Image 1: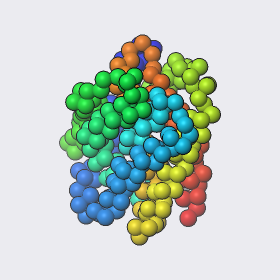
Image 2: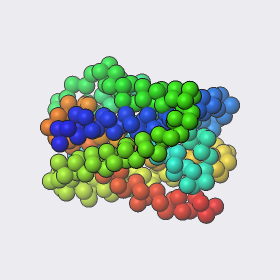
Image 3: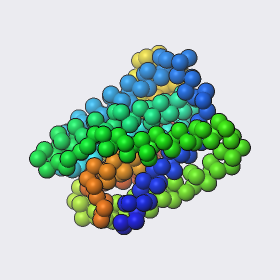
Length: 285
């Protein structure tokens, strides 16, 4: 357990972010300048509407403070490479998805530490652990931004090597992630069972509402159907590995997974049950 938390957890996230970077081109960043409107719609949906929706649902379902704070941590996490894959499966605008993932993931070192510190303080009150925004930002840089940057550099200067290691990195990251989710659930099994009803219902509701918000926003903004599908996926799917990692960083847990990590761990399972029907519908249109 200690090894998974201290080594496996940050390593898994770093590998996932490295895999993301390896799949990015410099053109993915430049594309933001030529598709400002669609990108702005996606960014607003992810950075603003997503956390507001999570905040409302946490109150609506009357979640316990630590579970509610975990909900908020999850809502601050960008989609990651998963959204790129789902956008492709949904026949969406993969280029837009990749650009949103790249920029929002890099910006997360500025947005996530501040929002995470606020949410933990708001929900836990006097029981909230001291959160160093600077320390959290540095940790975020080391396990998210730096691996992405290294991955982009590898893709740019050693494209052949990047293509060869891409699938292996994804497989390794997935294996580590599965082990971490299992450990997070078993380590908090009693709390997990006691809160499964409200937490599961809240996570499924959050997932569905966010996917619908993305659809509505894309349609209302006059985007193409391919762009709208991508905005929906980018809004509705979060990087649960980052949510679990944030929980560990904030609580300083070294001997077991924090309760704050439970929503992200459960979400990593429920999001597939929710997203698959949407993907089938998206592909059919």
